[in-house]
Image (cartoon, rainbow, N blue to C red; front, side):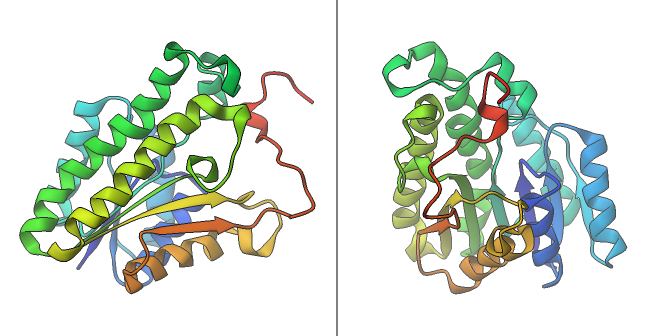
Length: 242
């Protein structure tokens, strides 16, 4: 049985990706900070007849993240698909607010690099050697579309980091594609679970399955924002209630 490890798993898209792959016979390793929340995700998969397990770790704690992935490999045998999609919570944002492009400082970028770039490299490099040895594997990482396809100056400090992760992933795919490993970046512009049909978690999750199956494009720009609507930050990125 193949295994997908979902790093930064939450109750919307992370769970939906787990359910989609579980429906295809995959075991699911959920990795995120809060063990109780992960247990709820595991229960959903197992209630549907699938196999899943929780491996708590904070992506900014690199040794803990590497250990969680090692534990998942020992538990399931291999990690055949890695999906990396951490995101800050509303609580996180009180200590690391988003910064507009003209006000970016080194200090405002460091926490974003820890989450996206350093965490992403740690996760990928934990599973990549085994994938290369087997000559097969899929790595997909998700960021907001401001990592490249969209210009979003309101969150410039975060986008410096997500753009760095995106750039490395595209180069990594070019490096390892001929060795059997497929790497893709998803630039996601959607209000997940907020009512638009194509922004429902299960619909988006199917796009991840298609990426894994088709293994052709190194990047998916998933855009389901209303064209007539001006860009608006998610509530968790706002310092003042509106």
